[in-house]
Length: 349
Image (tube, rainbow, N blue to C red; front, top):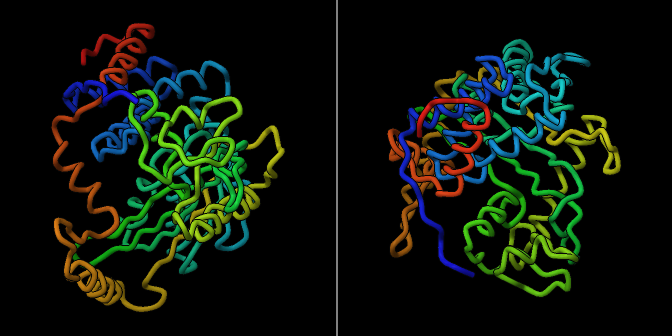
């Protein structure tokens, strides 16, 4: 594999304006364009480029093909007490996810907890953004996404990709911050592997195997004919990662009403649980106790050259460091400029 491609240092404000204008020119409402642009740019600031502005090309293609609809109407289509099913109208997952979160928060305030499932939604983007929105309301969040099929993740003991990367996550408010975890249950997100292929980078060992089951660090093997497969997280105990990987498929997709062979299946199905700590004890007391546990973790003696951080802290730091400027791959910037030119957007980057 070759070396990493060149990067372009980009002004974040200009990037956000350009991204917003691109979606507006593609027919999105101002609110819709702003929500999606903010999600993608924030992902880039956090260093999560597989969920950043490089997705614009994919989103525009889906809009053109009718797989994604601007102005999709979100609606509660079934409910019983604290259990809610949301139909996203084939809209942007970021918009559908925010609708689901707000419904979940409102219902948790009255019931102590809530469970929201979404169907008929496009790519949700960075699930951590939804978790952060729950935590900002002083609530606890558990979340999982069933990604559409066919997938590229091999069940434990197999060489064939059948499941998808299916992220899970959680968020907890602290007295002085938050804990936010959001990770694929595969050894690496599919978008990150595609990004490595585009940039000519090798993968770490233990991420993918060839169609014959042989370990490889070449991302091209995942897209070969016959294709390789992504391994579940866990390395030698990958059966634990496989168990986690199966959960969103069984629960999120199943409760949304989709089986594995349904041609109408959503790109993403969200399973979201919101818990109001005040149903159990005063919120301030809960946050204090959670903070004490967090300090126990961060106070542990670090290995040489390492720092003990809470889940989400690395991304928060990167976002602060990239508050004004962020490095994007030259190829991603070129895609943005081409999209802007095609749509008649004059914002420079």
